[in-house]
Length: 149
Image 1 (cartoon, rainbow, N blue to C red):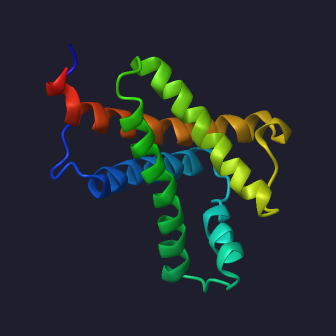
Image 2 (image 1 turned 90 degrees about the vertical axis):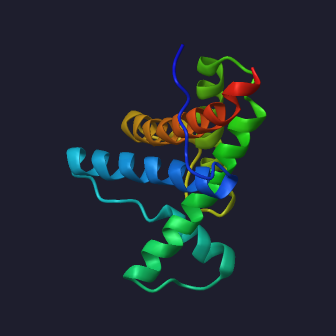
């Protein structure tokens, strides 16, 4: 039996921050390995929703992380809702849900295409990051409720 992952506080905000940090780390690692430019899609989504441009520098980073945190919060909530589903099924379903949700928002805002129009590399990259997010959310959520089973 695996030991549950514990996070101090363990609430939605703490788990969201941890899940967001995991996805950010996977993004930075992948960008360093592949040397591709970073994505500004989270910032462009917020700019489109608010109708205001975001200045460069720290403001742009903060807005990008805030937008990405909304995705992380949905991952944590979904992981909690799927806490009785087998882990492999939960990870697959949540990863695909996160890819599709993110793509649908970008599509609705005219900022991107749906995954079936992406290159294989772009799809693999997005699945990697969303799976790191889903894995962290599932581990944190199941760790918090492991005693209840």
